[in-house]
Image 1 (tube, protein in one colour):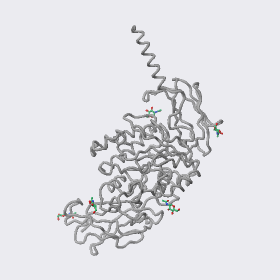
Image 2 (cartoon, protein in one colour):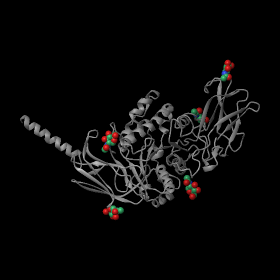
Image 3 (tube, helix red, strand yellow):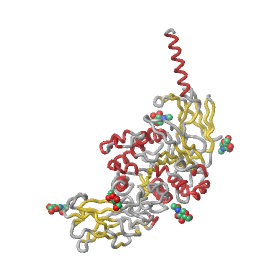
Image 4 (cartoon, helix red, strand yellow):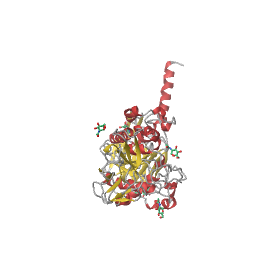
Length: 517
Ligand SMILES: *[C@@H]1O[C@H](CO)[C@@H](O)[C@H](O)[C@H]1NC(C)=O
Ligand SMILES: *[C@@H]1O[C@H](CO)[C@@H](O)[C@H](O)[C@H]1NC(C)=O
Ligand SMILES: *[C@@H]1O[C@H](CO)[C@@H](O)[C@H](O)[C@H]1NC(C)=O
Ligand SMILES: *[C@@H]1O[C@H](CO)[C@@H](O)[C@H](O)[C@H]1NC(C)=O
Ligand SMILES: *[C@@H]1O[C@H](CO)[C@@H](O)[C@H](O)[C@H]1NC(C)=O
């Protein structure tokens, strides 16, 4: 075989390989019939594959709607021939068909709505399906009343390299019906994602697209890009992580989030943290940086259409085991989920909102106590936060429980009064045990020495905006903390302090420092 024959053979091989990779006119995996695209004032970005570089692709909304044209390009990063368009901003809850045509053929995407697209991510409590919640049969039957909410679930895949499209789809875009929301345990559809979307829809009355990308048992490092893990790696020994590929840093980010960057979306909800509890130290760094990193990258890849500061809601960890002496792990993660402030949004976590779930134990959950079945309250609290933070709608009232705003120590009576709300919104006290004070023989500021101990401090009295607890009799009061256990409240919705309006629990809190003698 002469050199020319070898070259010819080689060229033929290359041609076959290229043809094998490049498809005819088609869409990226997460676009299709029944989808929701982000509505006006944003422009939805749609993209897909094609064969011939330079070929003209026309995307048309409805028979009489606007159309956009683009040319097929070879995308160097992806290594494939793609087309990509930015649709003119669209509004309205009437389904439309979108046609895409080129010299290679045409596609018709039917029953498309324009509304708000939310991504739901995290570990098993986000994956936890509607088929597993309390009252699941009524919830599943109710779903078909919401044809303007549309559902999508990404398959659980990991990758060592950044993917530009999902490797596999678990559930293609669909209207909600019995199978779509109640398919089978752990597959689809996510209960928290569904209920959040349903409550939002009830108020907003606009189409909602829900895209689940979650995987049980996974740590936050897996969902973070290397830009994040590099910043936080000093505080955590990643070699301690479970070696399973889905638990390896960056590998879910690469396969399950990175591919979605180019679409335009409204916001994210997140339920994760249990897997980081055994080694919680770096969670503040990881969580705050991951949120900012996702924001930057979704904004850039959507060419500015996804908000730079898109709303990010999350669930603060619920109780787990029916044990009251575990004061590390879950308490640490809950605190770090707020960047160690006890409330959100805050300076380190702008435009975030939180569902406090600490009062929703379910020790007899058939799925294990780590998976409480009351996702309705979890999602409802998330919805209250979403309305105000993500939509600036104040009509539903409070979205945060009471917060400690000041301390007053009464030396004579050995008591400590905690002011609980700057806004003077009344509080409700449902039980007494949940506060502790750190008592110390000297005024050292650490609360873990042999000379200092956390003592239970049951509520002695309260009024509309404060509670009074015992201080340290004859010793230094060196700190105060609240609900600092894995499972502090045995009876659901009976932790001590709530807001009267919307019945929202006060979140766990900790302060270590000299309060008084
Ligand atoms: C979209 O296409 C489907 C299938 O061809 C058709 O039944 C439907 O009427 C179309 N919808 C609109 C709004 O044109
Ligand atoms: C998606 O966005 C990324 C980052 O901007 C870019 O590298 C990639 O080429 C985009 N993909 C498509 C299909 O446009
Ligand atoms: C909590 O209490 C249980 C039962 O008394 C005991 O077995 C366990 O070791 C305690 N755990 C811690 C962390 O103190
Ligand atoms: C389940 O349904 C009952 C009866 O309607 C209701 O009282 C209860 O609050 C529901 N549970 C949840 C978690 O929604
Ligand atoms: C702490 O105690 C030391 C020694 O008793 C004393 O010198 C110091 O002033 C105290 N600090 C405060 C803030 O009270």
